[in-house]
Amino acid sequence: MSTAIPSAGTTARPQAEAVIDLDAVAHNVRVLTARAGSADVMAVVKADGYAHGAVPVARAALASGAAELGVATVREALALRAAGIAAPVLCWLHAPGADFGAAIEHDVEIAVSTPRQIADVAAAARELGRRATVSLKVDTGMNRGGLAPDVFDAALDLLAAERGSLDVRGVFSHLVAADEPGDPVTDLQKRRFDAAVDAMVRAGVPPRVRHLANSAATLLRPDLAYDMVRPGIAVYGLSPAPEVGAFDLRPVMTLRATVVLLKHVPAGGGVGYGHRWIAPRDTVVALLPIGYADGVVRSLSNRYEVAIRGRRHPAVGRVSMDQIVIDVGPGTDVEVGDAAYLFGPGDHGEPTAQDWAGTLNTIGYEVVTGVRGRVERTYRGGDA
Image 1 (tube, rainbow, N blue to C red):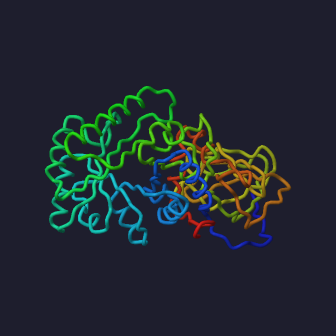
Image 2 (image 1 turned 120 degrees about the vertical axis):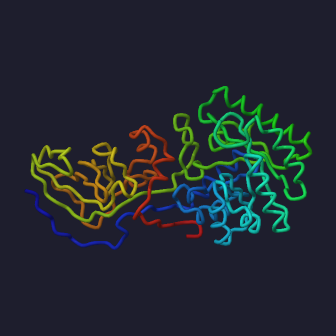
Image 3 (image 1 turned 45 degrees about the horizontal axis):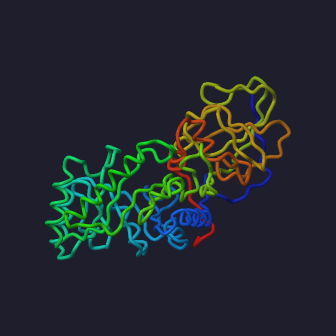
């Protein structure tokens, strides 16, 4: 039978916390700005800033050299405006019925990917008696979003016909494999992108701003910088091509939780659902109030470590919805109230988000955007 160890005193802190280092955001934007050369930097803050907080990340990025912001939806763009952010904002993913009128009223640039979207934005602009600022998103090989080749000419004709309602500011596309140096599809996409720009000029709707480079291309392909680069994950300090290098980026998010209970477990005692871990010796385990509802995915069970007081300890047993258990060993000096670091930049001896990604056979993007639920965001640095 296990026995609980009484607390030696607690420290007030959130039960589970994502610490967001805005100074790291600033550092990363400066790295990207240097790589971009003469091109501007659009910092992508979609999905609530990759779960880091769109507004504080946007402010830190703009203060450290980013010229513009990118989001997916009109709603995300309007949230930035509601927070008082006046910098140029582009939004590019629209369902039928998207509120283009609100975007136009708040000076949000709208990306158009179909003739229908062009017509809808123009209609919204005419209703308001204003010109809408738009960018044409071109599909150069992703075969996902963007203007398809079979409607490209019709879309250009419509853009030209709607010049009274639409200010065609830019053109952009998205790269398939910029994180894989030497993949020929990147050069193919560049040729298709250049051809699209030439066609826009011939159609009488020349773009003033061209952007193609994502995080990987910003760091690996300076020839693709054009007028602006559009980094996302690199702003948050995760390498878009970890097998190539870290590029002096600093991880922005640190995920940590508070030790809420210590317990003796005898040799042979099982831990968690199904007793998927059996104590090989008498030991002490620590309980952390965080689980798969908060972003510690169940498939990590028995496959990761956390850092407490500068030392790594294995997480044991199945990840539960709200709780995980850490084997801190016999004779431990860990106390209730201590901070346990799940991932971050490694400053406390913890794994990184990329370490988690490697264990899970996924990408760092999924790890950080998966932090959710009851995890509180705490900001330091910047304008925190």
